Length: 144
Image: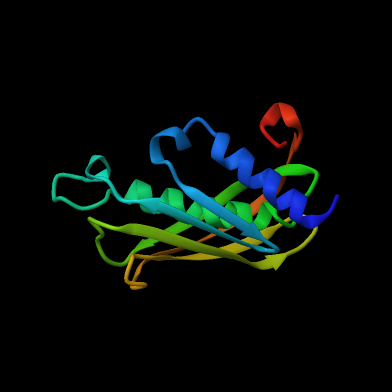
């Protein structure tokens, strides 16, 4: 399958995930790279009036996960471990996570992501290890 078709199928699969009905992120995927953008809303806030760290984690993990899955065309990958660093708060605009694969072997992938606000200031970063699963990428799993 041509790579571009694989990337578009992954993007459609991501958009169709039930949890994304709530967060409403946008994603673009290329070879070993993925970007996730989430518009900040008040319902993401903790009691101090800024976006909760769980939204940071989602944007960072999703960008890393799909950067890795861009290199794997037959199965889902799984997040084996992930580290998240919250650098500064965000309470308006959009957050954009840019993930890229930094290591790939037959059994283990490592990816890193940087998270930016609307002014391109870094607000977070993350890195994770990912492994191949036994779950096939197929239309029944949203890969279409």
